[in-house]
Length: 319
Image (cartoon, rainbow, N blue to C red; front, side, top):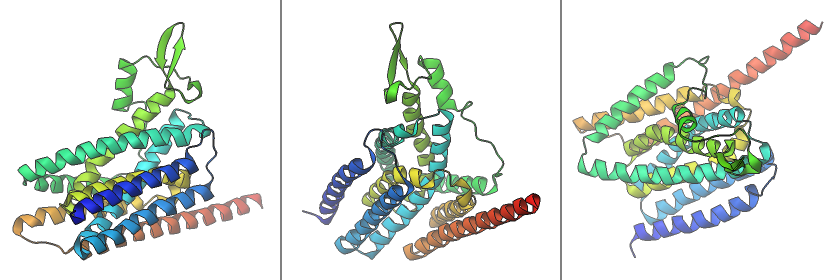
C-alpha cells in the first residue's frame, strides 16, 4: 500500500470520525450554539487540520507538508470572508437561530461536493493544458488588486443576487420556513420555503468563493492530496467559524487587504514560473502567515481603538 493511499484512508477515517463528533455537538435540532462551544469546535477543526499536517510530514516529506499547510491557511483565511456573506444571507432571510446549525451543515456538505467536482475538473484541465496555470495566476492578481482597492462602504444586497433572482423566476417560493422543512403546501400546491433558498444560496456563494480559492491552491501545490485535503478541512471549519464570528465583522475589517496581498503574491508566483523562477514553499508559507496575522492584528487594533473613542465620546455627551 503506497503512502498516498494510506494518507487518503487516514484522511477519510478522520473525516468520518470528526463529522460524527461534530454532529453530536452542533447539529442537535433547536440547539443554541454559544460562543464558547463555537470556540472549542473551531479549535477542534484547526487542531485536526494541523494534526493532519504532522501526519503528512511524517508520511511524505517536509515540502508536501508545508504546501498543505500553506494551502490550508490560504483557504481558511478566505473562508472568513465567506462567513460574513453567510451571516448576511441568514439575516436577509430572517433564519431562526435554532435552524442555523442544520442549515449550515446541509449547505456546507453541498459546498464540499461542488468543490470536489471543481477541483477534479481543474486537475484534469491543468494536467492537459499546463498554460492554464498562467491564466489562473493572472486572475488571482486581478482579483487581489480589486479586493484590496474595494471600498469599505460598498453595500452588498441580496435582492439583486443573480442566483436568488433565478430561483425566484424558476421556483414557486414562500417566505414561510415551515419549521426548517424545504417545502410547504398551500392550497394543495407545493412551495419552496425560505430555508431551501438559504441552503442553495450558501452552496452557490461558496462556489463563487471557490473560483478564487481553488486557483490559489493550484498556485501553491500541484499535488492532488494537498489540493483536496486543504480545501475540505477549511470548508468543514466554516460552521464553527460562523458561530464564532457572528456579529464580529468590525473586528476583521482589514482582513480583506491581507487576503488580497496573499492572492496577488500567489498569482505572481504562478506567473514568474514561466521564466523558470520558483519561490521556495517555506517563503510562500511565511508570506501567507505574515499577511494574515498582520491584517488580523491591525483589524482588531483599529476596532478596539474605535470602540474606545466611541466610549469616550458617549461619556463626553453624557456630561
